[in-house]
Length: 176
Image (cartoon, rainbow, N blue to C red; front, side, top):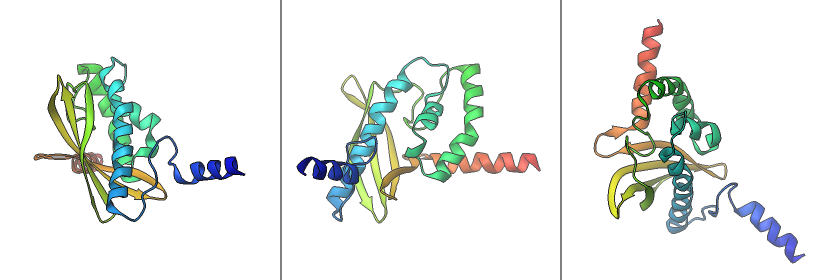
């Protein structure tokens, strides 16, 4: 019976593919859950971004971790993926939308997390030779028992979602 209760607890309260607990009602537990989700993503993603591959790392993330992205962001990223691949083939690795860098640091760490309404904002910093370098703020929402990335902000200059929406609008106008 104890094994059954343990299995039930693990299957109900742990998110698939991560080690973070579902957020309870307190801001601290929501922030902890958000932090764990974001850190796990970056721990998985950064080695791919640093490795020489035949595909942009962001496209690999869309293939392997699509369930980490909110549907609107995922759709716009997928729409942009062929252009990213074409640029990658012609010029090599370019600006990485999740790392805010062309030459990413060796690791990325969640430094600060804040919870506002249904949103979580996780400040992620690149760490190279002990110094903080890149800064990106991942914006997430928790729904249906799962965290989803909804945007990536690049203080002070802008954000990924706005850039993708603008590119989508340009393509739509050109097709008319």
